[in-house]
Image (cartoon, rainbow over all chains, first blue to last red; front, side, top):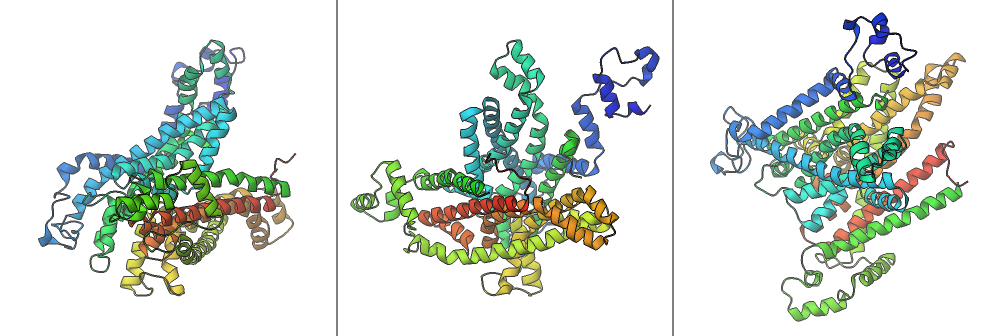
Amino acid sequence: MASLIPGSLTEHNKELGSKADRPPISQALTPDQIRKPRSLWSDAWSRLLRNPAAVTGGLIVILLIVVSIAAPYIAPYDPIALNLGDSLAPPSLKHLAGTDVHGRDIFSRILYGTGISLRIGFLGMSLGCLLGVTLGVVSGYYGGWLDMLIMRLVDIQLAFPGLLLAICVVTIIGPGLDNVIVAVGIFSIPGFARVMRGQMLSLKEQDYILAARMIGANDRRIMIQHLLPNSLAPLLVLASLRIATAIIAAATLSFLGLGAQPPIPEWGAMLTDGRQYLAIAPYVATTPGVAILITVLSFNLLGDGLRDALDPRLRVD
Amino acid sequence: MTRYFIRRLLFIIPTLLGVSIIVFLIRYLIPGDPARLVAGPDATLQDVEIIRAEYGLDRPLPVQYVSWLGNLMHGDLGRSTRMHRPVTEELGRAIPATIELTLAAIVIAVLVGMGAGIIAGVRRNSIFDYSSMVVALLGVCTPPFWLGLMLMLVFAVKLDLFPTVGRGGVDHLILPAVTLGVQAMAIIARVTRSSMLEVLNMDYIRTAYAKGLTAHAVIIRHAVKNAFIPVITVIGLEFGYLLAGAVVTETVFAYPGLGWLLVQSIAFRDYPVVQGALLLLAFQFAFVNLLVDVIYGFLDPRISYGTQ
């Protein structure tokens, strides 16, 4: 039966249709033909699993998380201890990715750096998400002068290209890893605020919100219990894409000398070290860049896949 | 149209004021006494107080902001604490380099990005389509500073085709411009492709084919022209981001533009120059966005300006 194709339009119509125009189940379908009801999330999950690019991205993300946890156990060398006798050794079986000018094993530093980058990306994104979602919800839900004020502030923030704003923040609060998280968080705010505001504007007119209000739910309850869960899908997509942006931004700040300070094995900072030895030891600068590229790429693939899976309307072509 | 333009122009004022407040506050939010910062670490307490009075740092913050803004309007951004020259002079020296670099980057990004996007859109699902979209995805995900170093490694260090660092003739410009332009190139290619795909499905394209036009004429005269509208917004936005991206590229190639000046000034705690460079970059960004909105209005008569 064509109508049994998962997620097909006719099937949805049937589910939505009134009892009267639906044929009695016992006549129309045998019990084994009746499919278990499926939620948006399980539908999205099966769509995600059918997207090879997204699965690849997701698997690499999982691998990166495992590496970041296991780094102390699997790294062959100490990432910080100096070993000047082994300075700038080319890649070999002893040092898979060679050593830097201080004789530190680059492969071990890359492994340790995974956790640092993921942590900054995740925490920076989360900070921006928390603040941006709060602003967006308040702005979109209440509207009026509050909306006007918040959106003007967001506009002003958008007038600063993200990286400049992050540089501005780090200039004020000083360099360092924790400050990079704050900087990355602040520059992620406008994206989240805008998406949530848009969501609020369209969702708050829905019937179920009217219903919730009629049974006496207050604003807070409507926002947290009804509007927020229904905005989770676009939020999840934006979050996974913003982690990628946050990781690149953090590495950029470190590269400019405004983020992680030596001897922390942060990928962007490792690149700065490698820059001076580009002519004699190109592998010092090459590997951290590949690590950043793979990490950012996998989060982007996962994010694009999530977008396609959660909201097929947003799919490009 | 004129009313829309004026409204849009007025709209930019609160934004610019907001930016100027943030930039103004940098001096006061950084730890330490601004007067001590100007006077230097060796100055006596008395000297610091003299400087405080001379620079008006003893007045209330809003008063200081207004007078700072007034000076700004007259093109006075203070003096560099490192170079002991007016900030505007420092900025003036750096601007041409950054504009040159940004323009070169956007030209490369538009030519290659749009070219690839058009071909990929016309030959959908071909090998060219797939490979150019994979390259575009990699272009978005590659950290620009690493790309710069790799280009430098291959084309300057190994092949010796270009100089590694500094500013000079066209040969100094190529590697930094490509580095800066790659991200924009990738995004322009993706947008052009999806815009082309959308336009090629339109009825008027079928009509154009039906009346016997050659594929070449249909694509150039009808499809590309209409597909260009969303692309121009992206070009404008990307041009704005290039100004920020120049900070990174100029640092990689030690290219003496605004971004290089900004990073150097942060390192030397030369805050008047930091403020000036940030202001200039943000203002340029705001005006480029304004320009894009206006051009967009000219190109697409369907947009309503909300003047009724």
